[in-house]
Length: 99
Image 1: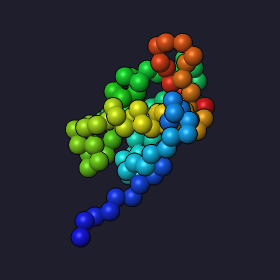
Image 2: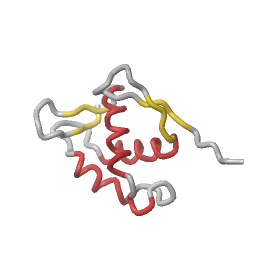
Image 3: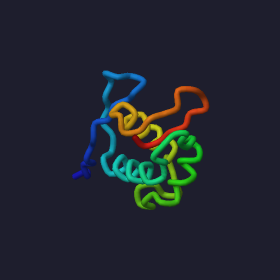
């Protein structure tokens, strides 16, 4: 029998009423890593810098060699923005911080 993966529903600030279900373990690991590296105030950190900072802290069993870290960081970023947990700068470049 195939192993069932626990899923979690995420939002997207760019598509407010669109929700999708993603792997809960990967989401939770990425959320913890992202929240640990983002500063608590503006001007914040670029997504590229955030990925570089969090990649070494990701569990190797979920993200072997940092695989798919960029996609998962963006997924979590958009969800946390939609929930008001993190913010982004109003003008480019994109910079993120915890609320």
